[in-house]
Structures are given as C-alpha cells and as structure tokens.
Length: 266
Image 1: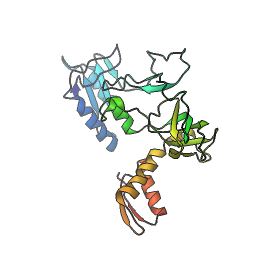
Image 2: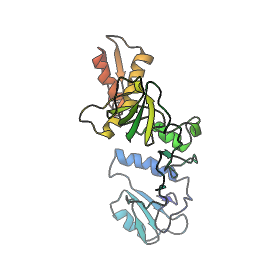
Image 3: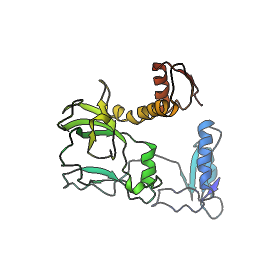
Image 4: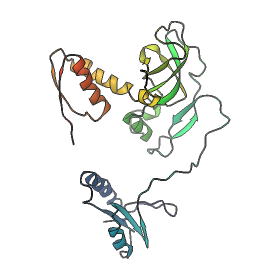
C-alpha cells in the first residue's frame, strides 16, 4: 500500500506527492506480470485516516486499485479528446515534432521545414511518399531529450512508402514502386533519400510490416559482418530472440553457414 504515489484523472488530475512510493508501483507491476494473482497494488490519499473503501478495494479482485474517499478506481483505457488540432489550411509537408521538454506530451504533427519538399533531386536520389514509419527506442530517447544532441537529431529512422519521383541516374526503382528503407527524419509525409538505402517491399507485406523491418535487418547485418567478422563454421551464442534484430541474426547465421546456439529468456 502506498500514499499519494499515483495520480488519477478523475476530477481533473492529481499531483503525485508520494514520490518515494511511486517506484514501488513499477516494481510490483513487474512482479505481477511474473506471478499473476499474488500481488495487489493499493494507493490511498496522501493524508488522513484510511477510508472505509479500502476493504471494498481489496475485495474487488483488481490487481491495481486507487482509493479516493469513497471511490474505488482502477486503470482503464479511454479514448482521449485532442486538445489541439493540425492546421487544416497547410497544404505542404508535415512531420512529427517534439518540444524537447523531456516528456512525450508535446508530440505534434506540424508543418515541416520545406528543405526537401520541392528541391530538384540529385542524380541517384528518390522521393518517397511515406505510408508507414517504424518506431524505435532511439526515437523515444530523442523525444524525451536524452539522446545525444537530441535537439538536432530528427526522429524516424525507417519506413515504407511509394516512390513518386526519381533522379536522372536512378536504375534500381521506378515511380510507383513500393519500397522500404532506412532514412533520416522519417516521421514526415515524404522523404528524399539515395536509392541505395531502399529496396522493394515483398509481395503480400503490408505497409506496417515493411516499415518495421529495415533497422532490425541492418543492425543484425552490421553486428555479424562488421563487428563480429564471422566466418564459415563459426559458432555464436545468440540472445534476445524476442526482439527483431536478435531473431534476424539467427536467421542470417543459418544462411551463411554459421551454427547458431539460441537461448530464449522467460
């Protein structure tokens, strides 16, 4: 049981006064995931006697409960009401921006700088209408302002879309092709990249599936070839199979004649 360690949205929200108890909720939530039914999290108001509703809260069978007065509250997903809307009159490029204040609350879809929007393409460049973008942990760090030089690093490292324009020397893709690839600042309506960083989307793949693949594949390729320098007959201990790049490493090792020793953590 904690006091004032959780803020609830009822009545306009609360200020978390019990910061020392707040980490307990994160710790016990992990324990609840590993041992369902054995732990109950209960938070009451920061001051005063224990309300009578505590007994009802414990009998509710809910794993996470907050008691405020006579009210017993449990977590629930609800549809949020937007407090801001995009500029409907803007007809140019859009991108996902952040305020750099250390939270995710100020992420917004805003008009993008027009640096690449209308400029002529280089000989081997392509312009892509982005249909889906992959989200990586790096993007979260940038939005939170904890990534090195976060203010100067755009979010969005991979995605998928349709080629809408090609440079004079492009030979690998054509206008109308469905492509996926790695690029910089990909959380926007279109990107301009070199043709060498994109490949065609396999038949049957959705935009979302295609956008989630490039970083995992390239990370695995870089780890195996550039960092590990693996050769035919090498044996490797592979962990992290539940994440994309770990799974991809083992798939590639088998194709290159390496023996993959796998371990899955439970």
